[in-house]
Each structure stands twice: as C-alpha cells, then as structure tokens.
Image (cartoon, rainbow, N blue to C red; front, top):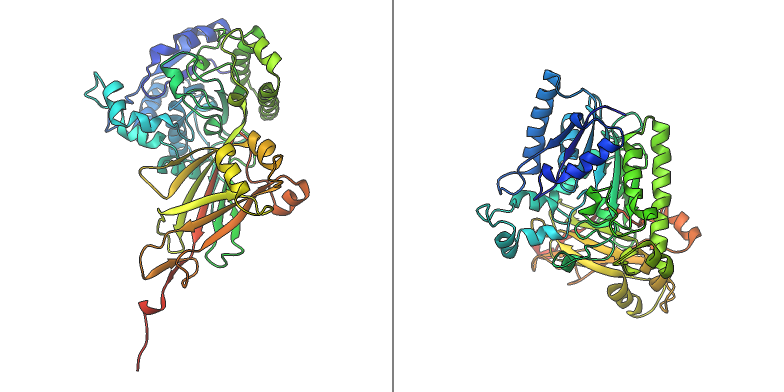
Amino acid sequence: MTAQVAILHGWNDRSQSFRKLEAFLGDNGFDVANIWLGDYVSKDDDVRIEDVAGRMHGVISERIATGDLQPQFDLIVHSTGGLVAREWIVTHYPDGAGCPVKRLLMLAPANFGSKLATMGNSVGGRAFVGFGNQFQTGREMLNALELASPFQRRLALRDLVDPDGATTGPYGRDKVWPFVLTGSRGYTRPPRSMVNEPGADGTIRVPAANLNITGLTVDFSADAARPAVRPWSSRTGGMRIPFGVLPDRDHTSIKFPGDSSGAVDELSERAGRMMIEALRCDSAQAYVAIAERWAQASEEAAELADDTQRRRRLFRRHAPRAQDMHRYLQTVIRVRDDQGQSVDDYFLEFFSPDTRGDASLLRFQSDILDDVHVNRLDASARCFYIDRDDLLERFYGGRTRAHRLAMSITAANPGRNIRYFDKEADRSRGSLVVHCNDENERAALGSARLHRNMTHFIDVIIPRKAVDRVFRLKR
C-alpha cells in the first residue's frame, strides 16, 4: 500500500464532494495529510478530455519533481475522471513503463459513455446545468461522454484492444492495475429518479463502466453470405480486470463507502471493503484473486433479481425491482464500406434463424432491446443496450424456440449509381450469428461473442458496388 492517494472527480463535480471518502480512507489507515484532491474544468465548452489529461501530466510531474508527490501513488477516479485518467496514462505511459500510478481504482467510471450526456448537451441541459456558467455545460466533454462516441473508440483502441493485432498496452500483471466498482441501483428520489434505467446506477450503465471489453470486425466485402470474422486482440494480455457490481449503490452514493445507502450492513459495508482491498493489493497473484472474488460477488448481486424476499430483506427501503438488477450488455456497431467510407443510413435487425416469420424479431425488439442510440457526431456508430437475462429467459426460453441470435444489416443505397452488397439489387443484406444458447455450437463459433456486463465493439464492412453504366468501353 502506497502512502499517497490522489482523487479525481467527474463532470460537473468538484473535489470538495470527496471529503467523506477522504475521511473513510483516514479511518482505514491512510494518512489524510497525504491525500490529494484534484480539480479540473469540466463545464467550459472549449475544454476537451485530452486538454485536462495534458495539464494533469504537467502538474503531477511538477509535484513529483518538487518532492510533494511520491513517484508512486494510488489514483481514485469517479465517473468522467476515469476517461481523464486513462487518456493521461495511455498518452504518456503507453506500455505502462514509468507510470507513477500502480493502482487505479475507478468508481462508476464513464468508460463507454452515459445516456445523460446527450441531455446535458441539449437546450434544456444548457439552461439547467449551465446556469451560472454562461450556459456552458462542457460541450467537448459531453461529446466524448455520449454513447458510441468517436473518443471512446479511439481511447479503447489505444489502451484496451486492437483490430490489427497489437498487444501492448498500459495495463497488465506487471503494469498499471485498474479496479472498477460500479453500482446497479438507480436514484431513489426525484427529480434524479426520472432518468433511471434498468442495469444502471442512474447515470452510468453497468456494462459502460466495465473495462473488460471485446472487439470484432465483420467483413461482408468478399462474400456477403459468409462474412469474414476477425476478433480483435487484447492489449491487457488476456488479463481480467477486477470488476464489481454493488447493488445498493447509485452514481453518487458509491463515493461514500461509509454510508449505509439504505441497505443492511451485509451490503452497505461491501463497497468500503472492496475499495480497501483494491488499494492494498500487493502482487499480481492478489490482483488475479481479486478479479475472481469480485466477479463472484457481481453474480451474487444479479441473483437477487430472482429472490424477492431476500432483496426486500437486504434493502431497508426502496428495494429495487427485479428488472433493475438484470445483467445487460452494450454493442457499439460501426459501419464502413470496403473503401473505408462511413455508412450512416443502415438498418440492423436481430432475429433467430431457427424460426419462421417475424416472431423472434418482434420478441427481441419488444423484450430484449431496451435502447438504441445513434451518435450525433458519427451516425455510422450506434449503441445497442440489450437485456442479457431476458435474452436467455424470454428469447431462448420463450415461444420462439430459438437457440441462436443473428444480426442482419440492410444499407440504403447512396444513389442511383452505387449499390451496397449486390450491385443489381435495390436492397440487399448480410447476416451473421452473434450468439447461441447451445454449448456445442458456441464452441464451433469460437465464442459466445456477447457477454453480460460488457461493452462489445463490432466493426462492420459492407461491399460498395458501382452499377454497369458507371463505366463502359465502346468501339
């Protein structure tokens, strides 16, 4: 355990809100005099996350040079602070070597966006949040926080995954150790409770917080009937990053581990224990063991959805609904043609190839798919929010009799001279099985591809064809 800790806040927040966390650390053996609280501008429209990370590097370097800050310290981040920290680390320590941070404890980090970012950038958001700040809410930061944003993709390709096979990154057994804790309980009081959605802490979805992600390229350009599928490589060496879901915590209360959060001690004390466990991790073996324990704790939290009596016993008030505790996943799908140009006007359908008619498609749309978000800066990128528990129970276990989930894509032709997929057809499509409920077939596919509590990046490449009259030869 290092002697010094720095704490970094999120968007529309300030360091003062972490006084309770500071006191909690003091009660658990940390010297409060050696706890640093960082502040940064988050609501001015001209400031980007990269700007904050660059300035952060300068300040930390200066503090280390003067001896005020030790060359090795721990870093705790909340919400948007997680993106700032990741940008700082991968920019200045891309392979982890020389990074002054060993333990990176992330509390409800916005690693893969927030549904509320779009609201913050709206006219109403500027009037409400931007009042007193010249109606600025931090346009550039909110653009980065929007679901399926180009910034999140660029950052993930630098520090977590790579489509081209690169495996070097800043996180690993002998590098920086990230830990992620997030809540799955929405806000209990209005007006904040109005923005709740299942599987989220009121602000950040559970899979959007998780640093364990997958990537996949699906290429229809050579054969639309049999697309080439290329899994992306991991920059973490296949290491599982400890990820824990706390069913009694929302986006705010996760900052206050000493508070009860309206739950019995069995739950309310878990957040603090897990934080201290992360900050006291002293070896790669201990890191791996923590990842396993936290994964088991997250599964136990999810099981509360099926145990109404225990759920009501564990929560003193405002017991969450079963649906709120389901395990969700995100897929961020981005479409390009085989010339590398973005395809913005396309339609995706999820269905089962095992059934006839539209029964499985309708079932998925009504019961499994909770939200689709088209990114405002890049319309070729869309975020799909999927209830994985209902996928298993109501899609595979329902009347559809499905055991496979497939995805098809249909793209609108850009004009009369260009066709996507078949050059002679006005509308054509490609499809791919993305998940199955049969273990033997799953092994044949290579992986289940869709994992609970995770974000999945899927790049889709479709063929672009010119009709015959675009070019001809005559005598």
